[in-house]
Length: 355
Image (cartoon, rainbow, N blue to C red; front, side, top):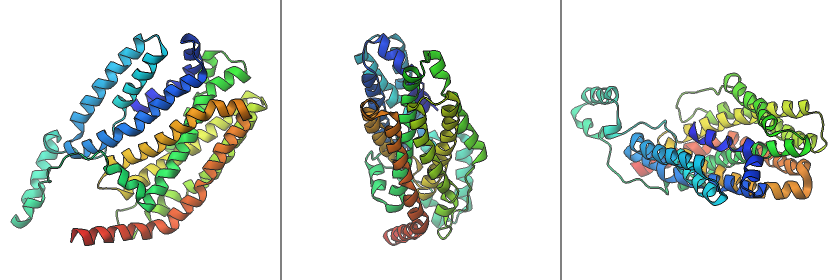
C-alpha cells in the first residue's frame, strides 16, 4: 500500500512542486526517476531477506526509514533535499511480496502450533525434514529469474505496462494544466476516472485460480482473457495522446483514462498472479525481480518523458507507448503456447538436481 501511495500521490503536485522549488518539470520528473530506481533496487535486498529471516524485522526497519523520510519531506524546502528524501522514502516503502510465510521467531503462535502438529503426524524418520536450513539472504537471487524464459516474458510485459501506467499518470496533471488551462486542484481531480477504472477491474476481472499441477496450463488460465486487453490498452493509450494533443472535449479524455485504468490494472492482476504461480517457493524473490524490471523501465521512460512530449507532442509520445504495449500481445501468446512446456522442463531439472 505505501509504495504505490507514495509514488502516485506525487503526480498531481508536479507543476506545483516545480513552481515552489523554482525548478523545471523535467527535474521534478527526475525525482520520480530516482524514486523508481531505488524502488527497483531495494526489494532485491529486502525481498530476499524476508524470505530468509522473516517479514517482521524487515518491515520494522523499512517502516522506520519510511516514517523518517516522510517527516523530512514535510519539512524540506529545496530540490536536493526532495531528491534525497524521496530516495529514502522509496527505500522504506519498497518491501518484497508479503505473501511468503514468516520463519522462526516471526511465526504466530497458531502457525507454530500447526507446524508442530504437522511434524508430530509425520513418521519419525521424516521429522527432521520439517526444520528449514538456516541460510543468509542473497540479494542477487532475484536476478536469476530474469534469465528464466517463461518468467522473463511475464516480467517484461509487466514492466512495459507499468512503464505506460507511470508515464500516463506523470504527464496527466501537467498536460491538463498546459493544454486545458486547468487549476492545480482541477488537474488533481482528473486522476479519479483512472482510479475508478483500476478499482472496477479488481471486482470485474478476477483471475482464475487453478490447482497447483505441473500439467495444468496455468499460463492459459491466467492470460487467455487478459490477452485481449492488451489491444484495448494499446488503442486507448494511443487515442488518449491524440485526443489531448487535439484538445478534444475533456470528457473524452476522462473516459479513455477509465478504460486504460481498467485494462492495465486487469493485466497487472493476471501477470502478477501468474508470476506467483510460476514461483510458488519464492514469492518475495519473484516480486523483487518484477520490481527491478518495471522500475528500471519506468525510470528510463520518465526521464525522457517531458523532452519527448516537448519535441514530438503528446500524440506521438503516447503512440510509442501504445505500440510498445501492443508488442506484449505476441509475447503473451508465446507464453500461453510454450510456457507449460518450459515450466515442466524447469520442474524436471529441479527434480534431477534435487535427486
